[in-house]
Image 1 (tube, helix red, strand yellow):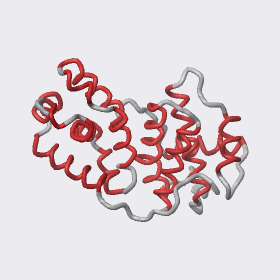
Image 2 (cartoon, helix red, strand yellow; image 1 turned 60 degrees about the vertical axis):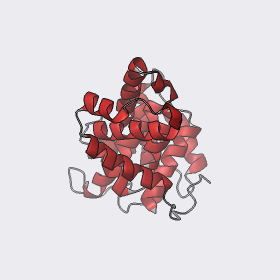
Image 3 (cartoon, rainbow, N blue to C red; image 1 turned 90 degrees about the vertical axis):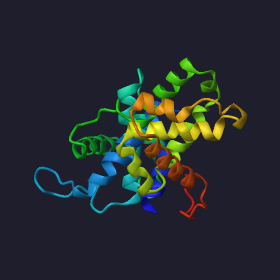
Length: 235
């Protein structure tokens, strides 16, 4: 419940802050795939516990989600989000706690320490989906029918559960599978003449059986009845 709510907060914050898709998905990679799984093991050099991490509160995780967007914006944007913008946004949407600019700076340093300052975002599924779809459009007209918005919707949905989030550990394999899912969902059935699985196998070297297994799991997650995770809306 806590994890799901904070991820929803990050996704909706990215939308409200009107950041680019690469900033959004880089932030999700930094926060969900790398920071969140490691934060419980983090202590500073003196072994003391920082109040932003101990105890782990939803409001503090929301702060780190915003910082992930901020850091991603610094990596990808010519004019990144300012600390003033993030401070004002946090005041409006993080209800349990108001954070200072100093808190934002401290949270940024903690996040980078937890990540061991490894903040590269070039090897993420979003970029690989974009590259694969661009290649498909070059060699086949059907590529124009594959909706990239569907790809992004699937990327968002797979963060809902920890089990499906594990797919992000293999971003190239996940990207190949998402492209096939988007092909199935968005291309009209009468235009399914293109051999999408053999082509994906050719460009990625993954076995068709492995990709199809992942595609089935993704489609099952998308279309299965969703559990009640609580109201994820920003208040």
